Image (cartoon, rainbow, N blue to C red):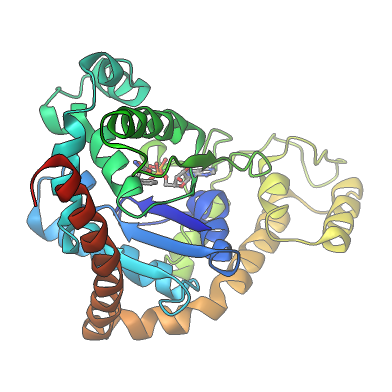
Length: 320
Ligand code: ADP
Ligand code: TRP
């Protein structure tokens, strides 16, 4: 069973990204044939600066590799190194109705927020369909916002198959309802757009500052506190086992400690959790050549599959 996932190259990652997506994706390399790529062409819809895009691609690669993505168990590459995807994108465009694209929520959301519409943004779902269909993907793990794009991929594939025969594999999206949204320091969804994040790989000083800024009620040291709905306790749940959480509940019930103490406990747990990944990350950051080689190795594996598939498609449509 082939699992395929695309990751937008946005530089800094936070613990919401990790528990919402990265951790799950890396675990899936032991469950199936994982294809994971850095969606560099997709990023052009929002990044218009060469240095920033290059830096983001490198950082995403370093972060995923240091967090455990294994290039020998999975296929990991940068999208623009397998250009067949653009050829398929054009062929599929001719099987995509305007109405289908006009109904895309993400396009409508972005334009309603004032982002000016251009063809790249509008046709983004067709490129995503090409990403998925080029590799005969069976399962596409996504967040709720991306389900519609996988449905559109099925519609496009059906239209193509109706014309040329059963060539394209219809994918299924997989949403993990168990992974709820990680809340940020102000209690809203953690997001780099809301300045409420806790970084995974920031300096201790920065992470401590972020943790200390978590919003709580104003109960004093000599008052009993409630852990339900407490932003500090909710974040601790990501890092603590049952015993540790019971112990923390006891501390909430006992007078004498304040939220500052609980925040320091959380800060220690965050450091402890991500510490084992830091050495590898440091190494990769200082060895860009090695990162490049890993990505090239992945691109070669991906290209082999992509070119065989494209040969078949070209033949069927009359472009061989
Ligand atoms: P951001 O909202 O910070 O811009 P992205 O949109 O780049 O994050 O998200 C990258 C991935 O991380 C997506 O798969 C998304 O579902 C997941 N993710 C982002 N924020 C959270 C969160 N607060 N809780 C759970 N998952 C999240
Ligand atoms: N659109 C996805 C996002 O914004 C990234 C992506 C591009 C993707 N191509 C994909 C995800 C193919 C899954 C499969 O998060």
